[in-house]
Length: 224
Length: 224
DNA sequence: GTCTATAATTTGATAGAC
DNA sequence: GTCTATCAAATTATAGAC
Image 1 (cartoon, protein in one colour):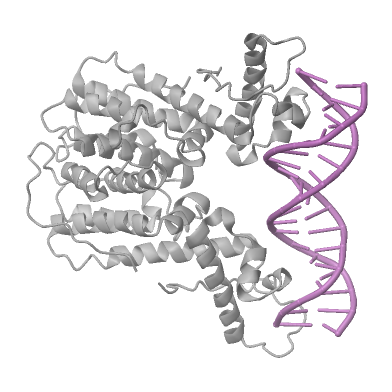
Image 2 (image 1 turned 90 degrees about the vertical axis):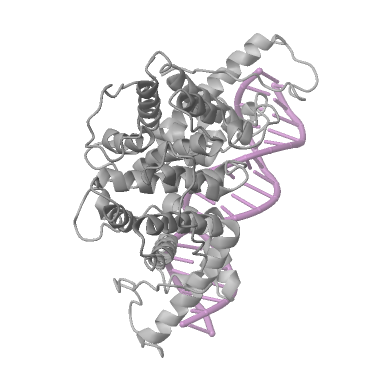
């Protein structure tokens, strides 16, 4: 475990009048970190719905009121956790660029994506269901505004000629759907989730009609 | 609109002692229907999170207490709505069996599935996110326990030889992922959702590398 | 059958003492 | 900076009158 990204806060209009001792942002950041740590533990253990200011405060020996000195409100904490989780996922994917073979890289990415969702169900839910905060990432619209889409778009581009934006979006959707169903419908995976991912990949790798026999074994990854 | 399925209640231990006038289950069912109608309207308009016993009661001029005469608790209402929504989706899919061409039928099913999610976002959420009540449908485990999976499994079987259980599951996951992302990530669809569905279908129809030119135009359907 | 009244919780957020 | 005290809403569910 361990936090991955910290997210710089918008200084906004925080600590209003004057600060007694710790005017230094370093201390302030440290406290924010403690709060987020506690919040993350709650979400990972009990889900986002169980996250309340009181529980966070209790977990770190604070009063609920003190939290508002470091975060505007509950939503800001949720957004920070969401951004963290997204970054964590991106790291899990980035770790797969080591695979040089285009087809192998695509499989590695796909398996890593689903493995992440399986390993961190509540984090995944937080990012993609509970706090769908999009970071438009520049002003670009369309599917490519989503960082993960670009990862899959590049992986697809390395494969062959047909590389639409819709194609990459569809691939992402496939993996997202696999994770979501694994998290919400017990027994969806059947014997193994990897098997389902393999079936989906067969289509994108152009071996749809073949007997499911191929080179490049599944690369297990992710799970920070 | 209009309710689709009614769900027989488990008589359990409802109306305890004796009933004054309307002992007849017909009246009881009618009241249950009114309650569900109100509940459905709330969910469709404001989402499942906004569904409360008070709001339902207000909507039909009841007191909150009276609802408990017809439903065990809030969860039973939610489950009933979820079952309704699932049946509605199945109807939208069943309406596509008219398409005789195997490839065309698969496309029609896929487009109908996604169109349903797009047309009834809160209902879709209710069924697959908020109230993931599985109806194990016999005691069979595995992906085939899910009725919609069987629909896609049959459609795939008509296409060719390679028809795993994982394959059908993966196809369902793709469509589910497309709907979910369309509902949660603004701008995911890009110009059109159908385009994304087409891209996904290209893989399953074996024309992944082709230039996206094919017979059998998309069959718009669903939306009760 | 239906309502009134209410218990029992839980929540986010703030005012003001220290 | 931190806490105590508290407000203001909601919510589910039940007891008991009518």
